[in-house]
Image (cartoon, rainbow, N blue to C red):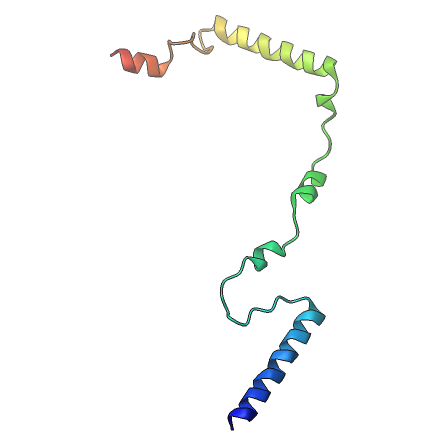
Length: 99
């Protein structure tokens, strides 16, 4: 009886190994946790990068200079109205600490 069970289990193991080889599965007879499920996923970084078009503004120094000029003009306007950023060391944290 035990010889029959031994032969049957050996045959089933051989079938499982063949099936894993044919279909590209990973054989895990012990049933322990394995990182294979995570590792077999396709990497998506390149696919995500392809979705977004290339930003030509990063190459053109004229556009970069114009944007910087606009940013500084807006900052100057805010400073004149008293809404600009505080000087270094005079922000909310510094005021809170000095009380």
